[in-house]
Length: 368
Image (tube, rainbow, N blue to C red; front, side):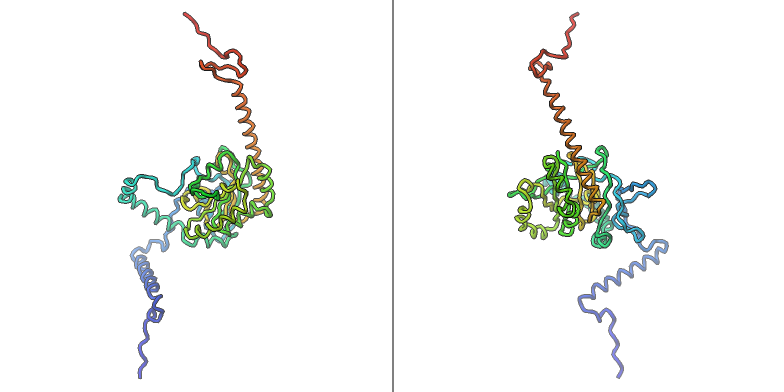
């Protein structure tokens, strides 16, 4: 009796895996046929690289690095690159921005949905984003220095060269929070230590910069200058499931903070675009980031991932220097107000001294 004819390989697999194997086979077949039609075409076209922001090292002999080089280091150089140029948004923030809500009238929103040009542009943006950032890229980059994106700048960025920290809208720990509080309103006018994270892993990395045990100098400086400096936490929870898991723990978060710090802890759920992430260097959503922001909301220093000893030392020195600058600005503003108080304006519009002296700087009328 002859042996029965064996079944094809695909029919020997479990029924659930057959469609996957079939699709993979068809994909390879189409790729092979396209190569036969275009033999000069490269087998794997390079992904688009629209990023224009560059990270320049302090050594002028080294070439400038793009964001793609920082995010996906090659096998020859897996060390984080030095952050040698200011990062941030090119325009100052304003409260209410980046809320993630479409406040346009329904007619305009419907016109946008039905517009063919808008749909094609949105489709190209999604296609471009799919090539730019693979799904598992953030996880795969964690194998290099625990996901550290860049090395902190050794010195503060100049105030006139600094760029702005964007505005985020979210919910705070204040009981009855509306969920539409803006970070700009809290950060404006004070030196802020801004901590951005989205998981417990990222929070531990942030804690290596500002923790009481890891870097006690930061806590001492903040407690000694509470009227000029503050800490602001931004917990990014874009997943609705993770947000509702975090929601019952708000009571525990309140116990860990003073009542006056409830409004400095933000839970941001939406409004953070890829452009914002690229502008502030927050390129890996699984990593924690720390920023030093002055009273004008300009980023003067930035750190990522787990801290290194020289970064912790430079962080404390930069914070102390920014507090000295803020104190000097306060003294200058006080002196300017005192000088302005010496001069008053009477009802006729003439400048007179505050002590009730005669009008000064009057121009005598010349009769012809």
